[in-house]
Length: 255
Image (cartoon, rainbow, N blue to C red; front, side, top):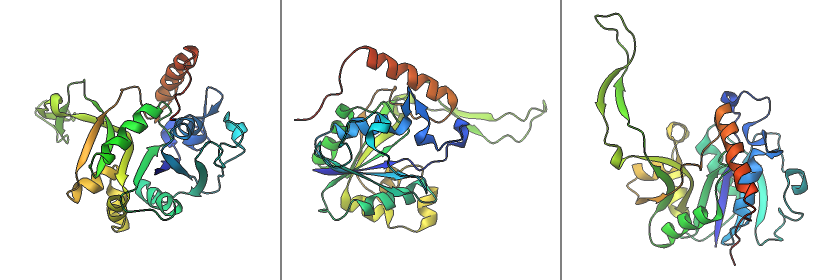
C-alpha cells in the first residue's frame, strides 16, 4: 500500500484567474478534481491528502463531479485535506505529516493538482519504480526541442541586450520532469527535514533527494501529462480531456 500527497495550494497568478489555480474550472469541474479522479482509481493508494490554499476545504464530492463517498474510503482510499505552506516543499511536508504514521519503506506519491491528465497507469508505473528498489521514481518526458544554454545579457557591440547563447545541450540526455513523483517514506522524510530556506529553493522534491545522493529513476511519461500554468495550458488541457472523454474509455481501476 501507499499514500499520496496532492499539492494544490498554489495561487496561480500566471493563470490570470480570481480563484486558486487548483479550483479553476476545467470542462465544468475544478482542475484538481481530474487528478483526484485518477488517484482514487488507483488501488494501491490507501490515503490521499490534498494540500489546499488556506481557507479552502474539500466540498461534497458530487460538487466536483465525483461519486458519493469518494472521500470516505468507499473506493478503498480515504481523502482528506490540509492547508498549504509558504512554498511547495513546505506544503508537501504538511501533507506527508497528515498522512499519519507508516513504515519506512512505504511509497509516498507526490502529485501536482495542476496536472489533470495523469492516469492510473502512470501512477502505477511510478509506484513500481520504488517497489523495485529505487529511492524515488519520477514521471518524465524525453526532450524533443533543441535546448540552448544562455548567459545573462550584458550588451554587445551592436547594442542588443538579448541573452547570448553559450552552448547547445545534448537533448538525447535531457528529460522534462513531471509528477507523479514517488519516494520511499524515509527518504522523503529526510529530504523534507532540511531548513526552510533549503526547501524554498528546491524546484521539485526529487531534487532534494538527488542532492542527498539518493537513487532517483525516471519513468517515461507522455508529454500530454502537462502542468497548467498559463491560460494557454488550460485551453490545451481542456481539448485533450475532451478528446479522452469523447473516446468513451473509462478510467481503468486496479483490482
